[in-house]
Image (cartoon, rainbow, N blue to C red; front, side):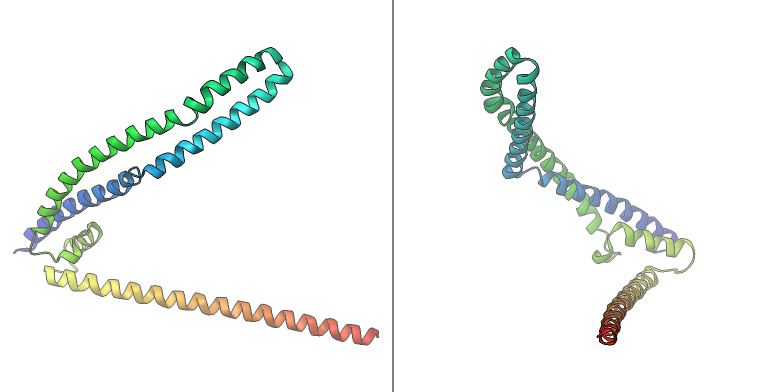
Length: 204
């Protein structure tokens, strides 16, 4: 495979990977809507908020418009508790849940087609078929840092190891700095206690 063909393959694989990752992000969002408990919780939250609004409005109306307050209280008992506060939000959320399931099934069918094409590219290791890795290897080839897929993979893995090592080193340095700062504060506190003790002994 020539360098140009390899670059074209990487672009094709990257586009497929981006599409697959977009579907995967959508799946996570849709899956959150599947839970009936989530619908019940949101409906209960609506129930509580509407209750608070009705009670607050009723208390104000008893002071300003007493006659209106009696009518309002009647409507509150009949409508708010049975329909407005819980049933309507729950029904809407269940409809949304049903539509989300249909959309999930449609998108998953498309996702399987994309993944079949992506996994069918045998020249690229399956463990590197992610948009970021494919973009990085393409950039290596385009700027001349590498000339073959093997060189691109080796360079990618080498830089990942170096990044991980650098990250771990920095985390260790930050931990040491935190320990030193805590020790310094502890020593400073002890010295302050000694100074106070000396001062008191002198006064005594």
